[in-house]
Amino acid sequence: MSDSSDNIVEIRDVDYSIGSRQIFKGLNIEIPRGKITAIMGPSGTGKTTLLKLITRQAIPDRGEVIVDGRNIAELSQRELYELRKRMGMLFQNGALLTDYNVFENVALPLREHTDLPPRLIRHIVLTKLHAVGLRGAADMMPRELSGGMERRVALARAMVMDPEILIYDEPFVGLDPISMGVIVRLVRKMNDALGISSIIVSHDVQEISTVADCTYLISHGRVVGSGSPDELHNTSSEVVRQFMHGMADGPVAFHYAAPDYAEQLLGRDAE
Amino acid sequence: MLRELYVIFVSFLRTLGALQLFFLRVLQNSPGVFVKRFGLVAHQVHNAGALSLVIIMVCGLFVGGVLGLQGYSNLARFNAEDSVGTFAAFSLLKELGPVITALLFAGRAGTALSSEIGLMKATDQLAAMEMMAISPMRRVIVPRFLGGVISMPMLTAVFNVVGLFGAHVVAVNLMGVDAGAFWQQVHSGLDMSDVYEGIIKSVVFGVIASLLAVWEGYNSIPTAEGVGRASTRTVVETAIAVLIFDFMITAVVI
Image: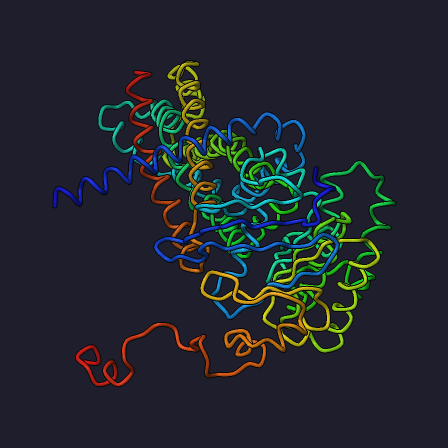
């Protein structure tokens, strides 16, 4: 059933709130199989929350999240873990385990889920570390790494099980231009060579434009624009144009909702 | 006022219920973790137990010394100073050993456990494990819980032995009680039921202290303040729970 569908992830009419704050209302997104899909949007629109919904770290209040043909809210813990073994996720801050060194961090999923001999594990881990340029850092501890290096190790860990779905949460933040170029090419290459479906959350318009096949722009809890990066660049929608071209004025307010500026400065609250 | 009290009471009951469910999950996973991941458990016995040895031994020595002094000076009034051995052994094995060990454990190992788990949560390490299909319950929580539960009776035994030694040093070497009389009194004053009472208490306190430490860490708010608060709560809650359970167990056993 899952093979017949062209979409690896489908989000259908999803509502989600954290406390009293509504994050999504009637959200619909389709993420095609074997492509690189970017989810973009201003800060605080719930992009990371969306990844949590796709991976069932959170469950929607209403609607369905379908991953590889199955509603993930209905999966048992065992089925969920089976699904997650086929997913790799790169966290915003790397999320390496701080009491293991780089090598052990990358080797962890293999040690947990496979019976591979130590030599083969070593081989695979070094290959993945080489791909992100950190084979020489295998013995270092996470606290000795810079933020960018930590993210690259986390990327090696995310792909060590050769997942079918790779999810990146802000993969380009904190990378120097050289690492950025390499990582962007790596994302593209993995996608093309291994047929991985990639989901990238980012607000880095320029990098996303070079790497993504299709893009969703989210604002105020719903999709405001979708299509290829070129289509989004040339759209007539004001919201999309404002975001894609980084304009201060437009329908998306730069300021978080607040009382009148002058009134607050001069008013009774100031005393 | 009444309404606020009601709300506090209901939220207390909710937390208690959640804690029980958490405890059941921990228990449910414990046998599997103990058998399949014994390496992780042994590592935690080292972390929680072996690394607490110094504080336990120093405190045990001085608590025993105080018992020797107090026992001698009070019993001497009735010309019963030879009984200081019974007095010290009785106090240590049945009450002070398990209770003080548990309180020290909460301060030394409990806070370390809860802040470690809290920080793992704050830095997304637990979420990353979940995403790698590795259960944080089985890999992080249960090994730490079992490490604490296994460590506590052993630490209590060490505390008691060192405490008795302290009492012996003070009573025999400083106050001049006869060594033979001291040990004879220890031997004759205690029977096995007293020893069992101490063991039961140390196991129960081990469960309480370890459970509260991992619970508070696991449920901490993932911020610097939240993690700090979690370790404080671990000590406070463990102290209260240990003293309440001490009274209840004593009441049942006596």
